[in-house]
Image 1 (spheres, rainbow, N blue to C red):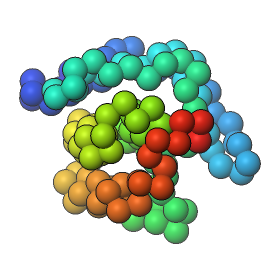
Image 2 (image 1 turned 45 degrees about the vertical axis):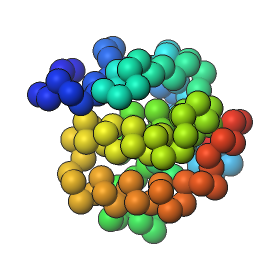
Image 3 (image 1 turned 120 degrees about the vertical axis):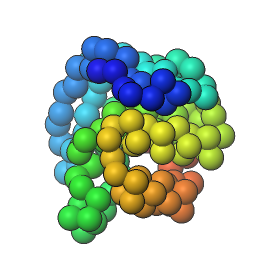
Image 4 (image 1 turned 180 degrees about the vertical axis):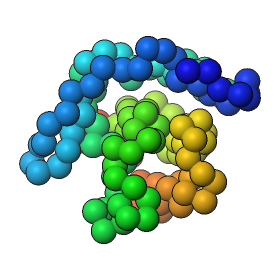
Length: 133
């Protein structure tokens, strides 16, 4: 997959292999292969094989507005989860990567802004919690 604007990040091919299951009643995805993309600001970012993600942390009552946690923005959510857990970048920068990732996934501007504001308002509860999925 290639994207029209060279300054935006792009996910590297091939797409990651995934395994889905329910953990404590919540859908969970495990990466069966590493997942890499190139960010225009931070360069190559890789999520290792074995990483667990719950997708986007969206309360079920908001799924009708934003979509389910495993919608077209799953790749953006997985990289954001990894950046948050590793705390390798400051939280604000992780959120900026997420915003660019949403744009690259083709998410419309209004939905991107809503999701970005949500992680800015509520993401602090999860930032730096290494083992939490």
